[in-house]
Image 1 (cartoon, rainbow, N blue to C red):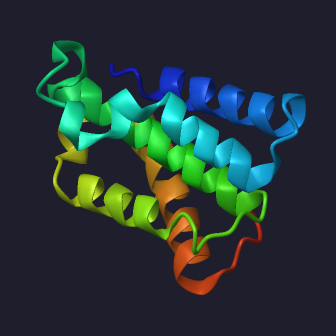
Image 2 (cartoon, rainbow, N blue to C red):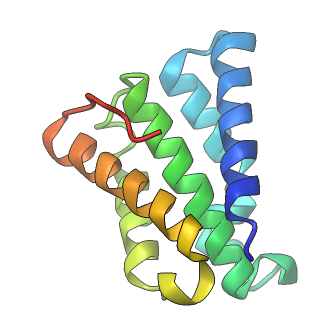
Length: 131
């Protein structure tokens, strides 16, 4: 089992703390989370920090990206501002074997998140969030 759900929870908690606690608004909360989780999602650090390489890093990065982009869309953030992160998320998704790193339950959540995120970023339709 990967750290997928743990990192979804950590990302969600950080976003809400930034949004409600620090009152940063959606774009500010999302931006702060991207900085806070940089080592997990940034390809440049992949080889320098052993703990973030390979399958565990990919599951963590998927969890952080999917949860954060879902929350940004749900809270009506500026999707244009976060477009490059969405594109990085799609590249990550396309370059790893989801079936090899996520359990069946994790895959169901991930695919629900992915469908919502794609719809939000491609059509600006943020109705009916997945979870």
